[in-house]
Image 1: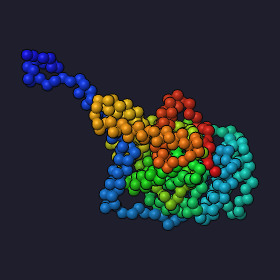
Image 2: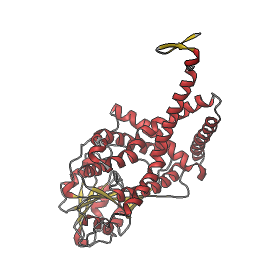
Image 3: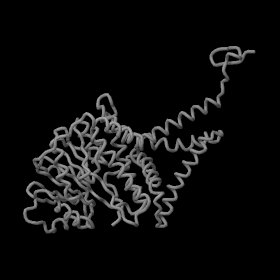
Image 4: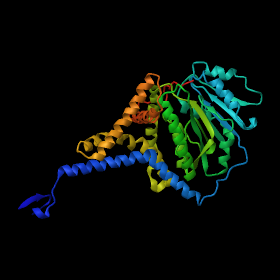
Length: 418
């Protein structure tokens, strides 16, 4: 007896069964476990690999040089309609433990129409403090305001911070010491979320997320370089600064990655931190994250050369592992994992039934966190699932905005807790 076998006609005892169902299951399993690997690696696996790499490097590396010479610095604060925060921000800035003769303050209030500029103008600055207010009625966005401020910079180091954050008093001292190493072109401070008892599950999850991110940044810097600084607090050498395209949405990330692309390291300094309050609700946090998502996807396109690991080596490895996968393939795989898991579970495979149950419980916890937040209730078990889902949903919405080109640099600020 002969049966058909692809490409050849063989006796039945020599021809394996051509089972389309089996091959289909194999394909689904391959897709499922590939997606599981990408998602796990993007969020947890890279941290494990990074920690191992750092441990090996510690066996052979020496401490980086630090400067004992205090450079002159310009402290830039860009504020748009921050009348509720600006006076507190000025007081916080003036409390920095750094010689008054070596620090200059630039407050940029472009477009503010709530009296922010008037508050800065009338603030009782102590004698000897070097400060300047830059204000124009037209609002062009933060990057335009920041680049306008750069025209007035005459110091070798620039420190940028957001108007609604509070910086620790030792921040400047701890930042500038890294510039003793000529390889260091920028320094990223630590972002902290100031939590209140009334904050929702997503905001609490955001605080946990940033603690984890801070650990990864510390290890990234130890291996080679931080892959992008947060705008709440970062510094750079004035000489390595370059003009950023005026439509750049996340200028802090793009600016520091361009510095790293030139061959400089971006160091990390947890002893310099900026604390900001959380968003008042999941909806407000989602609004903020959608803008950031559109911005980081824009940056991935513009920083495409950094994907060339043969040219940029360790920096490319860090960038792809820590950022690109988390912003692109990981969100894409999440719905694929869910529906492929359903297909595999319906075929009677026990392992996939348990994995599907785990996925359903995880997403149910995220939904419960959102629903309970609407009822002003907070359950800690739902913090991380809710934050995770908000983060990944925002990547889809951000992608749509980027493709349509309707994410303006003039974004609407998210309302924050007070």
